[in-house]
Length: 326
Image (cartoon, one colour):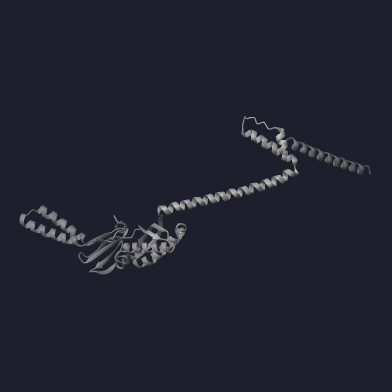
């Protein structure tokens, strides 16, 4: 089945229904005449009364019409517009009044643009959804001003969608759907206003591209992610190097902290390996400037610092004693 036939099924050509054509009164008169003739020939009263009742019901019902709550109707009397009809029971003139009924409930229709080229020459197929309804007070415009408002909306929607695709880049179609939806809706609304139709929403549902282009875009996205990962890894290396530089400055001025850090590293290594015993020769640590040498330097510096602090404390005590004696 071709695409045009699918679209015709989606957008039905029938926009209104006709109620009360007046054939009830013709059938009723025929039945009434037949019952009278039958009675004069056979004199069967039961059949006569039954046919008489049926004919009267048909004749009387032809003068009334029922409009549902979700419908609006217009009256054409001898082909001339006479007015709108609201829901309920209304009278009419059989064979003279023509009642056209239209559904005012909101409708949802699909429309698409197949293999259109974007501004940057990317072939795309776009499926979209259009929501619209008949304005209650202007149902006569939808029936009298346009032959088929469903067909008109279909054509305007497809043309507007194609124009927007041709004037937009592919990335804009993907990233600015809301803006494109609003633009299409505004253009269709201006056209549909003359037909008594109000457009309530337009949404792009799906954007389809060729498989070759989809594979290329996937590779590009993967390359971008790898690039970002490498940049992030490089930034982290710079940050770690800066932290090590700051730590080296602290350790160079504080051998005690340096020795404690080495002891902690050795402990963490032994902790990771669990019950495994790791033998670390002291000569290896000394050759690297670690181990006993670092501990000895830390001890000497700590001892020197303690002696100087004791001298300062004694000097303060002597000064306080001399002051007290005076």
